[in-house]
Image 1: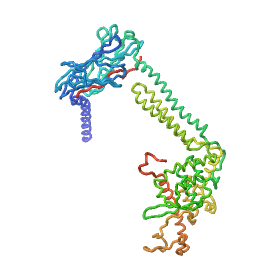
Image 2 (image 1 turned 30 degrees about the horizontal axis):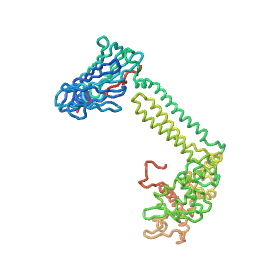
Image 3 (image 1 turned 180 degrees about the vertical axis):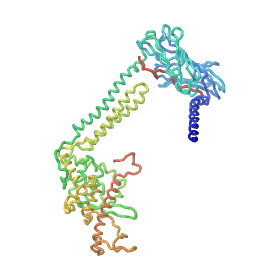
Length: 612
């Protein structure tokens, strides 16, 4: 208990210490900055023509040596600012860009006016500066009463302001009706109502300021409101309209996308189709079937075509090993009759006129031929009458539209970021609405290729056949064994080659690998029957070398099928990696796969101030 009490006491002490430090840290920072404003007083005269003459009086205590100061005054919510003069208690400053003592320069930009002045080196002393400028178009005009809403002190300053008094003198005949101070200041009406004085309640820490607001009768000043006020008074209406537009885009964009899919993208209803089929519903090649089902020409379709061409005797595949390196050789057989256009394009891409090619030779090269092969596949399914249009082009049109909405959303977001500070926050609703519309069109684009009735019926039957491939065990053993090799390319196109090969091993463990594929088999396996370490064991070979026993032959057949399954899987993985591989220099990101509102900031003025 004593230990717990000790920790509680230390916690209380630490908390009090942090609280004290939090209270004094800003003041310490201000003092360490080297300058403190003993006073920062402002006098504002509102002229009968609606302009304001502002006089700032800064009494600065310098701790160290200083030679220059600056004051930035924003142009926001004004129609212009003109610097009248600058002086201190020693001299009136000259306006010239020399940087010499008792001179000042003015820089104008779209955002505001910056005044920089230079004075003799001042060390550990107090100096008072008097800056006078005219502000045009800062008074708001309303039928219920005109308003002065202004930030008399710089909103950003690195020094403490210990005392500040702001005095506002209204034009003759104008009496203050309402006053308010937003920040650590209090206001009072003096001299029968023409003069209003505001005083800070405590020292202002760095970057701390306040706003003043005074309302007086309308009609004393010229009645025309400044242009910025007309624009700003319309902001609620603008924001309401933008909010409605954003909601319309957010709801209407996805709804339109869904309606368009129902009208132009949804496949026709084909009625009742068998749950599964034991035989292919047509003789179409696996690559075209793959595109029919997922509406994309992808790597699986190309790999399925390679295996299908090998099964049909157009080429052979052989695995080779060179040390620890694994590669595969594709050889043409010369039997290339009755090839479909996309198959001929694939053969040209694989062999480029050579009788044989290693997969390794295609690395960093084959990817350039992929668009040509995919385009040929899309043409094939369109010419077969399975789709109303080429799937890639239909999908591309809607993706382009989605990109357009996305680009507009980005532009709207940039505009919202720039304009929200001006009160036009409704642009955020438009940006969100456009973003939601873009997302909806991105999601709907892959589903917009529409099948014809012929294509939809054929796709439904091929899906039933794919379900049948998953249940080959239900077929009679002899029937299943007879179909394994013919169905392998379709299993690859359906993305179920591993499951299919496992079924092959279960249904026909004694079935030798197909003649068009030669897996690499270790000629000297350490576990072979009769194997003596350091000596070769007799194994079956195409040339008939060695005379193994019947048991050895059965074991070799099973091992050959296992080797075929493992080797074919490796070939598919290697080919997939090779076909899409790009040189390092070509790789990019990704791959194929009254107005004026209520309380709070609403006035002009503010800006920055500092010394150096």
